[in-house]
Image 1: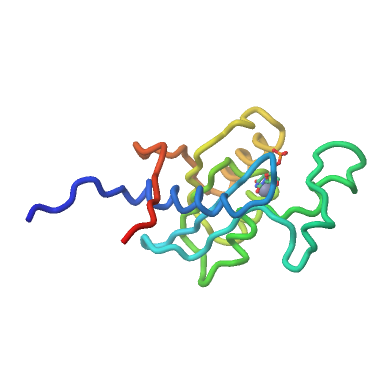
Image 2: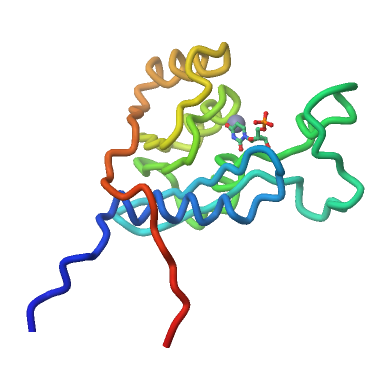
Length: 160
Ligand SMILES: O=c1ccn([C@H]2C[C@H](O)[C@@H](COP(=O)(O)O)O2)c(=O)[nH]1
Ligand SMILES: [Zn+2]
């Protein structure tokens, strides 16, 4: 029998895990996922959400108004969750992210030892946060590039 040819590439696989992780997010506006990989093994995953133990029904997902009544001061970003959830040293690892990281996440990525970022969306390109990320990542020699896989959709069928 010939080998199966429809298998997905490593890059498609790990970006797929990042997008699957994002599906755990309860943010009604933007679901972000991250997957940290070393030697082709997943060593951390995360998505954006309120801190462990927070009462989801008490917290607000608002984007506007009094800052203390919005999600922004409270939500833990996907990249930081993936770093905090990781199971071993992140030195020279790669983080796959559904969205280009903000400047706060970029700082955490640098400090954790991650050396490469592969992102899918850069919809906030040109914003101050993205510009600061680009500057600080370049300065710290953390490389970043857009996803280059062919797949833009992966179907996961639960079957026998
Ligand atoms: O680097 C990042 C930047 C943002 N997030 C999260 C934080 C929020 O939950 C959403 C952004 O919400 P908007 O309504 O689009 O402003 O994304 C993240 O996880 N990582
Ligand atoms: Zn962030």
